[in-house]
Image (cartoon, rainbow, N blue to C red; front, side, top):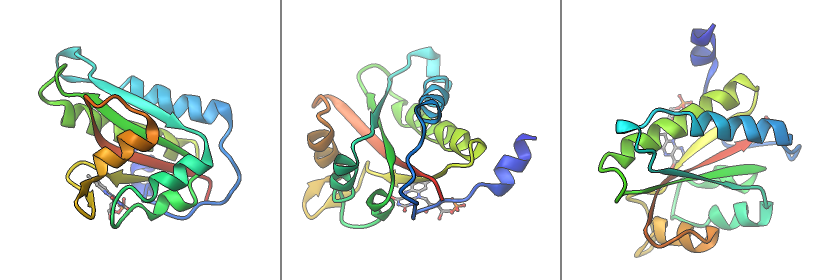
Length: 150
Ligand SMILES: Cc1cc2nc3c(=O)[nH]c(=O)nc-3n(C[C@H](O)[C@H](O)[C@H](O)COP(=O)(O)O)c2cc1C
């Protein structure tokens, strides 16, 4: 039952180095893609990061709270085009939690890493993530989700 997933879910921040399978990563992305969006405008862009060297660089995107990216074997940057939808934050949040619940169902740990409104020194974490992940300047970055086996 879904309530069992809800009861068992908890944030995980330390992961084993066993990688996720292609099917697991694909299912996580599908769950995020299938999240509802306001007026079905679908402003969210999910950017999968499989390269662990890149994931480790993302761990440095903000001053605190990105430690889960130090051991994660998969990460998804949750970005959105704010010109497409004014409530992109809500849409991106729903996509984030849909991916986390799919991971829970697969027995995979996850952690929401907040980037919007966070900084590294004086530099917005969003700018750092756009630069590291090669995103368009116009895209906002709500979060990065860190995934891994526990
Ligand atoms: C909007 C939001 C932002 C969060 N940002 C971070 C973060 O930047 N780093 C982190 O390690 N955890 C982050 N978390 C995870 C929370 O710390 C965690 O959900 C909370 O402590 C409750 O623990 P639980 O998920 O195990 O129930 C965030 C969660 C939410 C919903």
